[in-house]
Image (cartoon, rainbow, N blue to C red; front, side, top):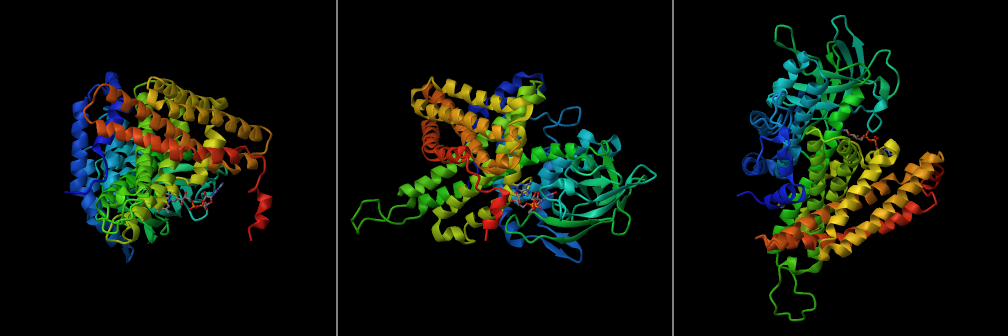
Length: 595
Ligand SMILES: Cc1cc2nc3c(=O)[nH]c(=O)nc-3n(C[C@H](O)[C@H](O)[C@H](O)COP(=O)(O)OP(=O)(O)OC[C@H]3O[C@@H](n4cnc5c(N)ncnc54)[C@H](O)[C@@H]3O)c2cc1C
């Protein structure tokens, strides 16, 4: 039997009790679903992961990927997984019936993605990219692109990628130079190179469809001159045959982690024979790509939480089995050694992990519910909240996921550092999550410099209101009152801090305004996860009042909430002190002192 890497009980608690997925089934759009179908799908996902994903996690890491004579080899199971997920309609599941999808609630799709990713994070990346890329073609591409390329991607037969980064254009995509030249037949000649492209090439798959950002000759400088193209490895000719499209792999990157997930350096148009097909309108490419990027940002946050989940259960199991030392205070040398879970510091490390994993997953479900309510036609409020929460849901689960996995590794002592146990791989695998899909620095600037102030700060206010509503709801439960009060104080500080920072922006001190965006992000992450823990506390209290069966499960929720509010939320105090401080320590004139 596979080791535990995710908790089905926790997923069901979040889906049903905290975020009320059943409410969605009342909407016309989701009326095909019932809790029975959801339960069945969850069980099937665990079954699939236990068979097709988890057993290959360590093997994929050790075998890695290879590049020889221009050919890339990945673990053969990568292709099997992609194909099986395509055949089961998972890649297409959330899309509408008219588009051939299942109208599966996003909440449910994320629940299954969480299971898959916790089981084998590198393998699932290929399917996630394919889902995002095909969705982009369906949203903005013409019928020919849908028919020629997206159909095979949805079926899991062809791989999709997201090809944005270039050597000189990483965080700042406005510096992209890949060139697109008009051709007389309405297509474009593409020349340029892309680096760090995940899933960019491998043997065994019939085609790879790159979604490429490029600049059409004569387009304006900056982001306003970027267009989006489908640039396949093999192009579909008029007669339906596949022809080589002059996209070559110049090399692959040797990485710290995610060894099973290939990262390629692509060169397009070296033989002057690379054709690109415009998606949507010229010069609107970045706006289109944001559909895929926003979904990928939430997906990377989910990946952080899922890897941390796998690490939590591995370290919990170890802590329950490893005998070492005596109870604190015991002087009896004849006493048998206790297992390390009997030491308070080990329990602290375990609570930390549980708080990060389950708090992050709850936030992911909150965001998914907003997506579902928007799909069901429930208005702008949820779109604004989702937009605001996207950089946070990318950042907290990844930044704190790294801390969480590090604590998991620490629970194993020396064995944590050795390849005989999974923690060292998970620690290497999760490290990329704060870098790709926009670094934490970039997410933080997006949160403070854009999302918090757009629409006159409307989204920022909506978030404070949503948290306050939960605080009010918690008043019905005596045991939650002290924690609710703490969160209320943090929300007051959030408003004060934001006002102070925005005043810098208003007075034109942009560099000072954004200098500590990263700390503001950390503060918001702590506040928002506190909100999610209070929500979980409310649901647990309600179920305990109703004499629900699994008392230990609900009490464990309330103990973890108490851990979070005692150990994690108070970290906001230090951040508030710094964020309200008038002294600028890191502005550009200070760089002289970095010697
Ligand atoms: C394993 C892997 C897989 C990847 N997969 C893909 C993929 O599939 N497709 C794709 O297109 N790309 C992919 N990438 C690229 C990835 O998205 C970039 O590496 C990332 O966006 C950062 O860009 P960069 O590496 O050029 O770093 P830089 O942009 O040079 O950033 C370096 C540091 O400077 C900071 N920084 C940069 N600009 C600013 C600023 N204006 N203000 C404050 N701080 C700033 C950053 O936060 C970072 O800490 C992948 C990368 C890796 C390593």
